[in-house]
Length: 179
Image 1 (tube, helix red, strand yellow):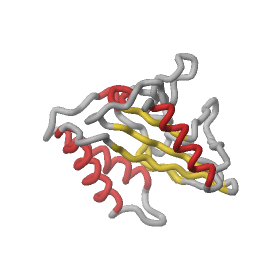
Image 2 (cartoon, helix red, strand yellow):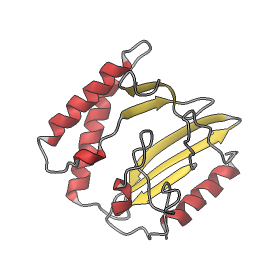
Image 3 (cartoon, rainbow, N blue to C red):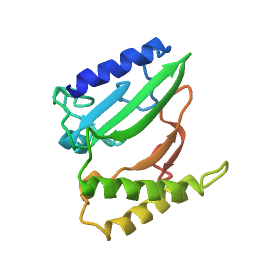
Image 4 (cartoon, rainbow, N blue to C red):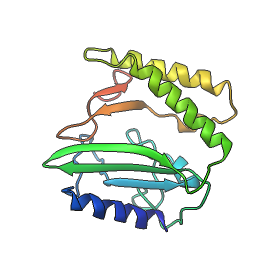
């Protein structure tokens, strides 16, 4: 099955539960698909300041799933946004058809370790920029233990709020990034 076909199926299922089929975003000149399905090498195509991944469906708007068939043993990123009664949310998860290569399993373990560590500091009134820099420090620590690293693929924020708009405040990012 292709990435775009799988994304369409996800959206069809979500609509049976009330998904309104749109995402409202705050950023200037930014449009959002309600889903991304990116497999294998498509998962590392960089997009923009806000969006870490792009995909390569169409050169004029290189964001979202493509006509690339998903293959066994490769990482498949699914970032799925929904709108229900005007409220926006999204969630990103990694999948694989069969077991992934060990390097991807190790990368997942590192991300989970970073996530769990950062979550300890996340509470009302927390310093979002300090939490962001903690994630950067933890990621750099992990990088020294492995060869998986590409400096061009660094994200500029690690989390965002949700509500009436997708990517609402607060952001776990540098203080001046989302102002």
